[in-house]
Image (tube, rainbow, N blue to C red; front, side, top):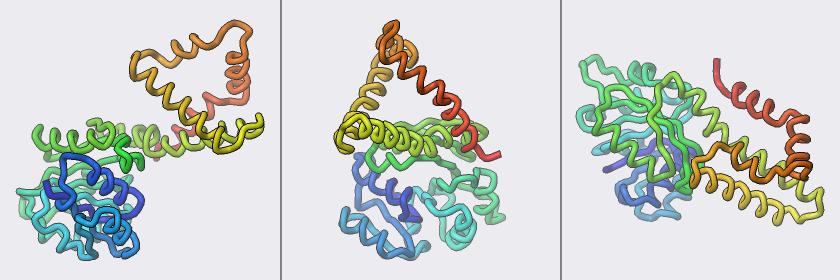
Length: 265
């Protein structure tokens, strides 16, 4: 599969790097277009076989998949620039621009000739660059075959999930915004470790391994988190005292409020 990514910023660059590390797409079949020469030079230095250019129209020629990784306000002008050179019978069209759903994408792609490619609205997070991303996928004009190709592609970059478009906002809050919330917890726990006398780098290493262990436990057992919590909260012990102090400060409520605040109304 030949893939063209338009946009080499944080997310576009992360996807390009993730695909280059995977086994389903050859590096020489990845093309990245962006007006920012610095972003392109960084990718070319890391992956010399990857094609980089600043001409979007040239970049999409002969592509099997075109992925827009640009800011939402750039989606329409970019599509207007390239849609006359796209073969709608050949390509899969995808976008990760937040808030620009499939209906709007189809309006932009409409050439008034009755043709429309499979259109995908994807919501990944930045961990995709280290093949640990969480990507949500919704689509129109797709087929089971194109769905399977997209799922396989992004499953290799972490985990991918087909969802109803009405749930995209909630999914974005949980994973795309959520990765920042997890980072904030790591920072807070690191600062707590420093207050307890640890060096910052040691405190961060401890909390990162602890979080990894917690995730691995849930993945291995399928247990509800509370089951694992019960295993380490002995009556009158230090763990339950710590949990109660966190709840008194509003821990669970703060997390829920943060997630709900992230969903656009």
